[in-house]
Image (cartoon, rainbow, N blue to C red; front, side, top):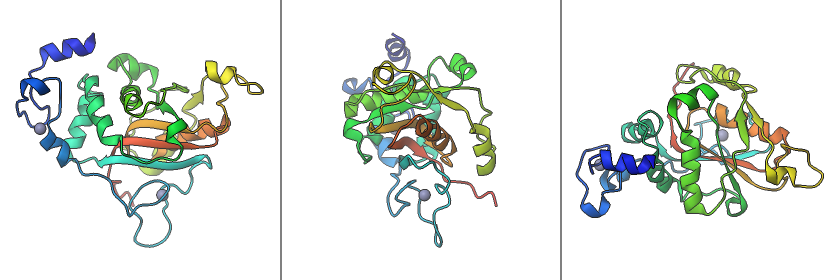
Length: 247
Ligand SMILES: [Zn+2]
Ligand SMILES: [Zn+2]
């Protein structure tokens, strides 16, 4: 319903460059030119967190990640165009753009994705109320249509956290510590020998979020799943921020 209204109210032009769409593409939001400007994140990278390798030494970004958290991948660098698309998803009320972002994420390779559950990063209650939807859940649903894997909202946010934007990597970790818990699911509860809220061990879980900055939020979410017995957790995001140098 909301999407139908959006489509009626919005002119058929690219959200990013304002180029007009042909009638056939009137349902689109981002044109091919802008989409091709998104800069894919490519190897060489840390095999685990997908961040470009440091010039010397081991990757520090994922050193403290919980054991179950194996791989994180992002589709594109968060340059101006990609950032604008994420903003439209998060603050512009354009949840329909999730399909365009998901299209850029489809080719990301993750272990066990063919049997995985997609787990969106939940929003805190206050932010969900303001926004009316969870952008990560919209992204997960759009990916679900492409990958044919179910979305299972396993995680809940136990508290609203401060906006991460202005925080150092260490402060980000502290900010999200204990922010997630695993909720009981019908599938989880139906698994013999596992209490409510425990995910079926062996089932790969793929966390879905819009942006990877330092990975602190994803690592904390993975920690909650790890504690609940998950064996394989990976993560996908649309954008990857260039980590600012805080030192
Ligand atoms: Zn465009
Ligand atoms: Zn790493």
